[in-house]
Image (cartoon, rainbow, N blue to C red; front, side, top):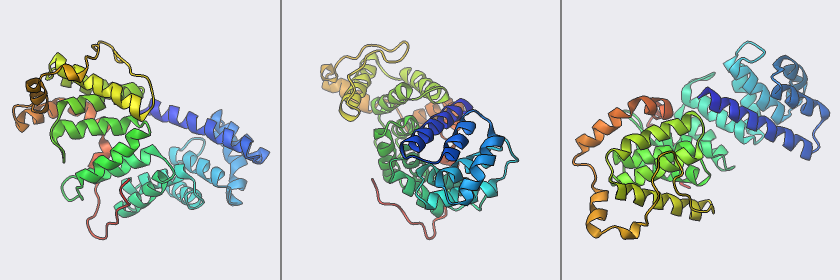
Length: 310
């Protein structure tokens, strides 16, 4: 997960720098962002602090990240929370997303599921795919947690439509477990494959492990049907050309129309029992614990306000 965070930070810094140049931001802000990109955090803090005190939302957001990670300074979750709050109230989607995580996890502030969803929802309305995914994870629920599988699926789909690999993986898990949907191995395989194609590093590895485990339970025809569904989704949703053999060792995709009605029926009832599904999920447990840890969050029932479904 550390590699993903490093890549995400680098992408964010480049984006912020481009925005600063295009919008004609002050030279101090550009210097501060450049120093942050170069990991010269001490100098970045020195340059960005006065700008943050003057109400610059970008400076507040970046300083929040520095204090949250403890890069170039002592880690201070409370200071990070205050900086993110200032930037979030000025409309910064990344700061809103960070606030949602802090409220969800109880970092720098007491955990509050209602406020976590509030800030995730504000970020989602600005197109943040991670925010859609985070809301979906919260709606999955465990004991003493609000469980709304239909809402979770809708938010995961919104995130997947924005190219979010983790949401694609989560959709695969929903169909694998039959959580709020008919258990469907082909649909699960489709989403795991899409996650593997879209994700990088650990995210891709987790999806590939799920594919490897699931492939043991599917026939070649069923795998082919899943791959045809992958190609259709890529073509329609992302306007990308269909792909075959996208992952190492993957077979080419025969069209689903070649399946007999009997094979199609079997593909929708590929587990002999839900007990067998449980065994498969337990077999995949190590990667799932890393890939879907937010499923373990807790939300209070009372006073819960849902954002509108996408």
